[in-house]
Image (cartoon, rainbow, N blue to C red; front, side, top):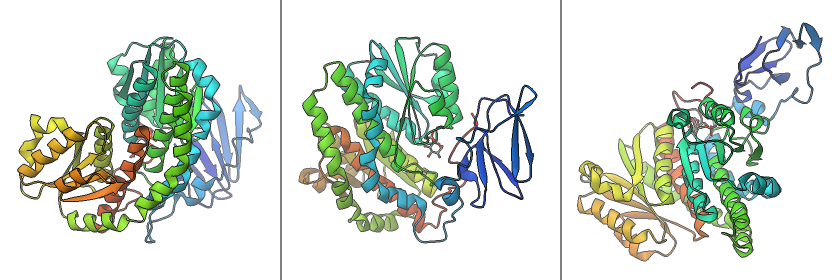
Amino acid sequence: MYDRGRSLVVAYNQESFWFSSDEVAFPSQIHEVHHLKASRVYCGRLGHLSKFENGKQVTIDQSLGDRRSHFSKTSNREDTDDTSATMKEILEQETVLSKAADAVLLHEKDLKNLFDSKKRIYIIGCGSAFYASEIGAQFLQKYTSIPSQAVIASEFVSQRPPLGGDALVIALSQSGETADTLVALEYAKLQGSPIVSICNRAGSALTRVSDVSLVLNVGPEIGVASTKAFTGMLVQLVFLSLIVGQANDQATVQEMDLYRNELLELPTKIRAMLQRRGEITRLARRLRQKRNFLFIGRQCSLFLSEEGALKLRELSYRHASGFGGGELKHGTLALIEQQYPVFAIAPNDHSIGKMRQSIQEVKARGGKVFGILSEGDEVTQNLCDTYFWVPRTLEMFVPILMVIPLQLFAHDVAKSLGRNIDRPRNLAKSVTVE
Ligand code: G6P
């Protein structure tokens, strides 16, 4: 009998049963997959599963059955070929991101109703989803004027944020099964706050507890390290901010049109970067023996620096930290010595003057600076030892483009070190324990 609130999925064929918290784990030869429901009794005989409620056998809901999906069929692929699932997912960003906005635009009315008269917004997530939450909080605060705060999901309950009906919680999770996020949402629900979720898995536990559920539509993500789901989340947060911004008279119809049109341009811009990915591969080969890396940025790029560092830690097992450029002088400069590698995520926006200052602080101590820069920013190019240019785009789309070279770098360092890219040691794709 399964009676906890968490996900438990059973798969079976004529010979075996498999239990898992996520169907991603199942082998390819399964016959049927069922998401078990709480407080039911299930009885399995080879090739057959029955369900009992109040002592009576009931029919298993076929709509949840036979979910031999793409996940199951591809999940057990090994990294025997040259191209990992993670690399495929990085490359897919060229084509899949334009679909991510659809769910948000489809739920425009529901979202406007849900955000109406809200006084506070909390955005929660773990890992990459948390860094997307940080960026989303900046977008929402700018376009809605509603105080918006990102909170690490595992800290949410203990921080006891003021919730209630006038607070809205937005939960981000690729898998929709992350226990830390689900526990935080149970707490928010008990306090009467409505929930919007952004998730890549329709039917996951997260979507089931949400008042409005936005599905990313970027296709299954197999690699443990999140790539296309992260950028998909950013796309949805852009359009969510614009929709709510319009309702609050903070965003105009023209802005929405500009973003919708630019979304169609993103594939070309991403392709232009991917065509130059050899530059990143060469840099990764040069730096692969380095054991420590720093990533710096300001404003939204601060959170990209954290995401770039997380990606490198997850995939290559090298130490990396990301933080605000302004913080260098408050302690971390002590680390900088000859050849110390520092990535500067420095889009040419109003933070660029201060980022140039941070780059000079590193250079003056003998550090090596690798810039992720806007196309044509020659002043910053001349300050860096090496740079990778990123096509210009609208302000809220900048993080989407700038994170891609960071994903490629983490991947290429890991590959040159012979790491298991899709399944890094000690990590799981769905973390279903607190
Ligand atoms: C794990 C993964 C991370 C991921 C995090 C959140 O820790 O290793 O890559 O960002 O879970 O997962 P979620 O499915 O909630 O987005």
